[in-house]
Length: 597
Image (cartoon, rainbow, N blue to C red; front, top):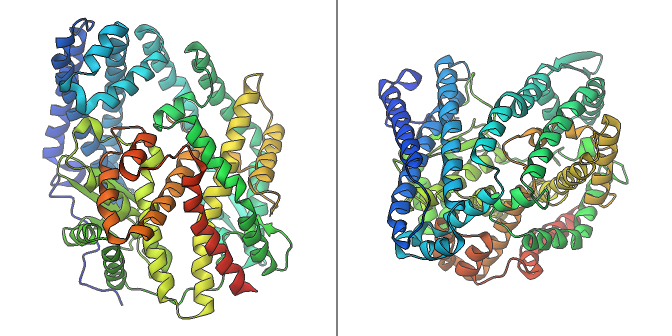
């Protein structure tokens, strides 16, 4: 029975009353457009920075940019919430198009500003950037100047932006349209069902192995029919990106994503090195699980299958109480924040039709609020999803006193607070497990997350890296892309994974994202970093929460290496830091293997 203690429908009217027909939101958008116009006019008159006292003028522009960033974030989040709560809200679709144009214009203005600071003489820049007036935004300015070094002239960049809108980004839209139209006939005994790619993919966790296998085969066969079309799309996206990189004289295909994620290549290499070193325990887990199905290797279509079934069926009210209890055990701030989110109507969890499927957290920086979206059903995985999104909201809350320009934290740390919250809850659930079967189910849930981040995402990283290297010499056929996918699986899973989806390069949307290259390793980083932080919290207890909040607060204003050194005194370019986190997962493997044997 569903509890009534906590509301399951969020409150958006205190932000902009009236939903997609909100008069106040319409006025808000018009005013925001005027502010973007004003910023552009200001920059047209700005000129080069030639004296140290120019820092005050620079500070004024930075504050202006930060204010607009926050207002755009507020607008984008509101529209995201509208489209999620009702997928048939056409008014929200229209608003999305309007804001998308404003986002693109604002990005062009940022590039104009980056050109201005790049054209400043190096000696003058060094003096200006060290002034007290710019102390709070120094890191962002340094990053922007580094990004500007990758840009062509302003005129050439405008031309590239136009080409991206009508060509480059259009390939992404074509991909979305094509993958969305594919229908797959999946056998269900003597009958069959016509499903979308997403619906077929969801059968990976079906309780019946025959259906899981049939869905896997049907998906591969359906994608094979159109694989050359998808190969053409992927080749065109990569070809355009490589030409831009060549024009901008970028030294390596990872140059841009590393700058975007505030990471050094040494940190990325240290992380992957530790994962390579500790592959054995996870291959043992995969082999142990495979034996439960009578196989010597883990069949890809059995990986997501649950081991048994959790008997912990929690009503929404019970789930909320359990989250509040678990979060409060970590720290008072986290527990109090979560209670505030539920009490103030920040959570949308009602199980109803016409809602989007994926959970998310939307940030509203102007009002210091967040909104958490999901559809709650009475299972432990739903409780974990709720905790995960609340972790994102806690990260937003930790930054609510930060200046607008410093609130844009990178993707590399975007998943850290959410994974940390998940880990806190998973341990609490395991403590309450009363049977061997329950513990196996929960350990399997934990380990599937580890394998996904340590092995599956590693395969995505290897595939994309090798693909881009080969693409420099010409187009790759679908057959060659399948071969690269197999090679990546073999390395990432250390030969412990059988019958992988060789066409996962088709159904993985991250490869087709034209705004963010290498949209893979930041997920592993965020997960792994959260584990390392969690290991630290186990050492220090509740006193760790203060350091944790301070780390989240500074996550947009310094490099990840400096961030960790400042708040934890740790060097994340060293393998030692990462080993502390992965050892927690190795213990999970050992406990799992002990139970299955």
